[in-house]
Length: 406
Image (cartoon, rainbow, N blue to C red; front, side, top):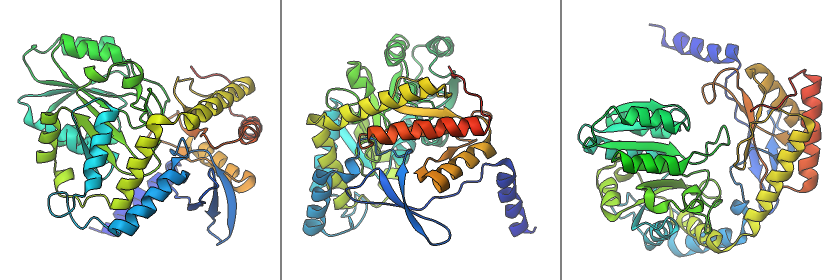
């Protein structure tokens, strides 16, 4: 077996399909977001404007967060020193877990090294321990949720995206006494749409199922204190487990789950992705804690982001550009072909100093290749208007269909 040739063929296939991933090295500049320095392959550097960042509110640049991280380094040093069970738990862990529990009006919280490992660990544990558990999963759930479900070895029933009727038809096939978990997201990051949370919660109560909600693209952005879509819709007490991240609206890194004392203790006691991972360093914990607490009381950043998102969507609509008109802050602009999508983003970067990452299969279905765009709290009106005009010109020049996509 020629292993090198085998793997080379696999990489060539990605190139031929136009979906080979190329990393774009950028250096975020403190106090200058959404600007960053692009380090080109020829060694040159130039300032670019970011249009695909998950730092929706610019909290990665917020002095409150940065100062908290500096103080933590001065007080604790750099690393955590071990897993949570072996010397790696600090008072900051406990404070942050209490903070996210309060965020979701839950009894307890648990911190993971990332949102991915939080989903993998929590879903994997809950579904594996429940006898003959059936997981009902939205067809567009994140890879981390799918990973956890597969780890559990539970039976998985996939329902059509955001389709409560299809979900109910599946639920009806199983006895009320059988263990069930309905797993779904609130904001879907590649389409920008929002799940019908109340309908799912009603079905869970009717058919005796646990609810597991991924709020990673909603925490910090929706609800009175940033608890997410479930808080905004007054449904927190109807969701059994809520998963979130510190790596998006909160501008730091790490993931978490919240729920009842016994459910969180079960995840803490059984999840390998939690037990055997070195815990997050103090500076990250301090930054996340400062960010969560800050956004519980500050609405300045959120109001700016909402205004910018509205201006951006109106501009795209006026220009006739084909974006998915979801009700969230995420704006997917459809291209529909992988090579063209990459060419467009290359031209944006090289000619216009704008960074937007192409999103191709398998992240999205073939034929729906897109740019996933985010107008943050830190973009200016000039940034937005200029970007819309550039996009309109590029779509016209490349003969991409200029029509609304429902």
